[in-house]
Image (tube, rainbow over all chains, first blue to last red; front, side, top):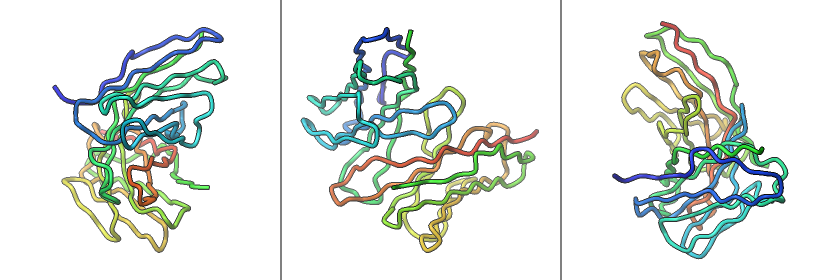
Amino acid sequence: DGGITQSPKYLFRKEGQNVTLSCEQNLNHDAMYWYRQDPGQGLRLIYYSQIVNDFQKGDIAEGYSVSREKKESFPLTVTSAQKNPTAFYLCASTPRAGLGPQETQYFGPGTRLLVL
Amino acid sequence: QKEVEQNSGPLSVPEGAIASLNCTYSDRGSQSFFWYRQYSGKSPELIMFIYSNGDKEDGRFTAQLNKASQYVSLLIRDSQPSDSATYLCAVRLYSGGGADGLTFGKGTHLIIQP
């Protein structure tokens, strides 16, 4: 059963705590992305990775960190420096980087992060 | 500053009619344009993408791109109640390195009235 999986579905964070959101894909997709969505808002890019062991900051990277040690995995850590972390976090992937305008992007089911 | 603008709606359309969703973008370097459908509480689902001027049809959906006017639209023919959702427009600048992230609009809430 192929696809993009994210876990957990819901995550609760206490003040000052770091939490890690999981994103896994078994589609052999090259590039992976993390977005954040706030209520009534569009998605905003946090980080993205085109190849293993390489990643770039997106528009709102402050307070977040990522790693890409394996092609199929791109975990996102929400650190205590992120002061307003409550949001819907979406992981996405692109089948093959380098196709230019024809590159498409598909999303996982998302993780909702709530601050206690 | 990359910006993507959409009318937030709600846009109400009778069942069986054509729904027309519009999107404008600010960066003339944008090369790919995407329409995603998002049901409440769910993740976005890719409906169509387009990168050449003109129309692209897929079933009941037609995407239209006009790069000179920096305008992209999505038409939904024979609208069904199941089409009721928020539609997100997204654009990508292609930097040459590939696989850049997308810039999203805030979405248009579409309601199909039975």
